[in-house]
Image 1 (tube, rainbow, N blue to C red):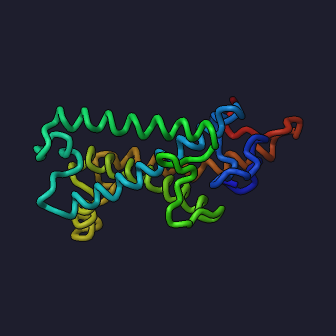
Image 2: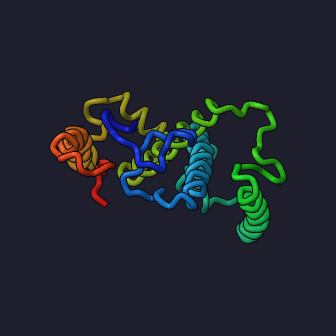
Length: 212
């Protein structure tokens, strides 16, 4: 479970990879759309893993443009050709992926569903992929947030922090107060959730952390 003592909704029975009963907004209550939401999370996680690698690669190589400037940089292929090529290629691949997913319920590439050329598919590997994808989405959000606040990439920011840890950190940044408030909320939330659960009369079959 995503916090101690939580009761998962009925539609989250642990059969999906990475299912820990976390759906406070009840987005997956429609069982027909739940597989699509799982596929959407998986695809966003995969793109986020690629994105974090790309950000670290550009930030560690001074000859490459920073990730927030990459779209405006000059390349060997002109911008219009690049956009048209990307739209056509990605459009074909995505159409094939969606059609394959609708037929098999699996994520794949081209005519392969699931796409597993290395033969590594297993229940444990699927859980690891979902977990790493979720971490990558959080990491990418952190990288973008750091740039928005400090104007630095992840490696540059890490070096600045190591040089002066007490003066260069999230608490001394422009969003230090907001960060403290958010951490305080996260720290108090489990206590509130457990108290709410203990104080209910037990008439509800399912405990809802967010009451809708």
